[in-house]
Image (cartoon, rainbow, N blue to C red):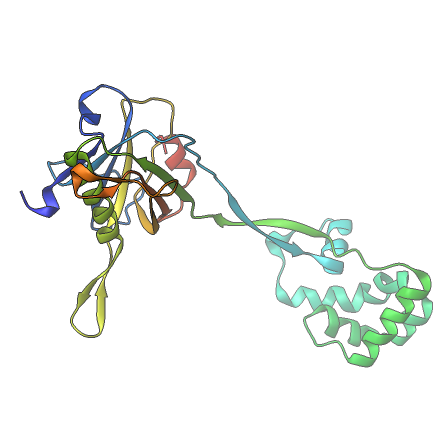
Length: 268
């Protein structure tokens, strides 16, 4: 059996017991929405169900502000549907001094309509004017409401962790553990393509077998694989070529593509 088609198990009877377990396959990344890999006898890894499966969903938002223009438009009921860039100057010229009245009558005289239009229309505020405004704010202890709000940006790419503790009971299980570690490490590294390029590493598919209630996981790249030999002792198994009694494997995956509402409805 070739390495690409080999099946690794821990414990050795894990997929024959009927208990829940984790099935991991590796493949060329498809970058397809809501993708699931169909098993067709290719190599895979079957591992016991670890404790503490955690799936954290998060979104990315950014802060925006409509500022003085937004306040004037809201007050006068002006719709953004028909709003153009040219309207900014008109609003600034007509309403700018009045809008700046919060800074005092002196500021209204200092900042004529043309200057206000330049400020509100995207022009650069002169340093001297900025200093006068800040001094006036300090005196009257008022400032212009920036009218901040949140804008949705995108779903975040999620990370996913699996941690396993291996304590082999036989030389066969010890061989399987060595193969499992190599299988993950080999799959996460790229292959050289000539002198100047890398082929992408494998993508991984994680499936929870004989288990209900946990959302499906889309294809992921393996970002990190940390292996610790003998985490709690310096004992070795003499009858299996002095292999360590215990080995811990920590795997950190990350999604290839963000999910959408359709993904959640599909069971992800």
